[in-house]
Amino acid sequence: MTGFAILVNMKPSDKPSSRDPGRRRRILDAAKAHFTRGGFRGTRLEAIAVDAGCAKGAVYLEFDSKETLLREVVLEVLAATGARYAREVLGVASPLERLRATLRFTFREMDQEPLFERLAHEDPELEALKPIAAHADQQQQADAQIAMLRGWIDEGIAAGELRADLDREALPFVLGALRTIHMHARTATHGRLPRERLLDGVIDVFIAGIAAPPSPTRSFET
Image 1: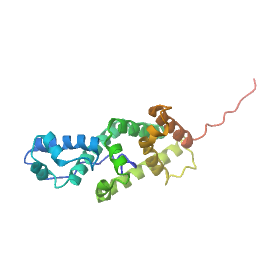
Image 2 (image 1 turned 120 degrees about the horizontal axis):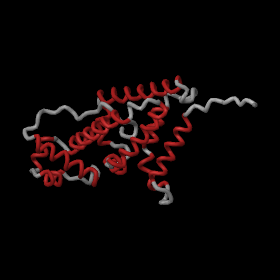
Image 3 (image 1 turned 135 degrees about the vertical axis):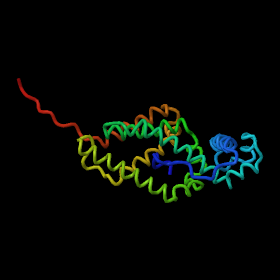
């Protein structure tokens, strides 16, 4: 799920009001820190309860399982990321530069929010998160983003910025695949090149590959 898209409209699931909103907030904050450090398998609810200043039973009053708690943490992170994406990327006027900004934004967010990289290293299939991706609302949002990206491609082709022969059906998924490079960039260079420079190179190659060739200029003899 996270490898494919930044889902702009994702939001935490609707839950009944907590009897202690402050406690629920402390549990979510502690859980995020533990999942980021230890992944899903390495996180214990007892440790989350200690850091949240409550009993383990209180964690179960708010979340019925560790899986539910992880999913709520993930939805909160995605909602915040989606809001930043909307502010920083969607307003870029050029469709070509919007696509560049999408990749650059994603790589930067993954540096600043290591939760997903930690989870993916532990479980590449992200089994614990599949119920989120399978939910009808999330499927609709994913479909909407695919449609949005294809609209950008059509816009870019019409504006002469993107190659007219691009596979508009495949390109949204190409973007999704490129986002996963971040997780492997550190080992791919064997320390011979900074990861940021490699990721910048990936973006440059991608943009060069989809950009329309420059219009031929006619030279005149004087």
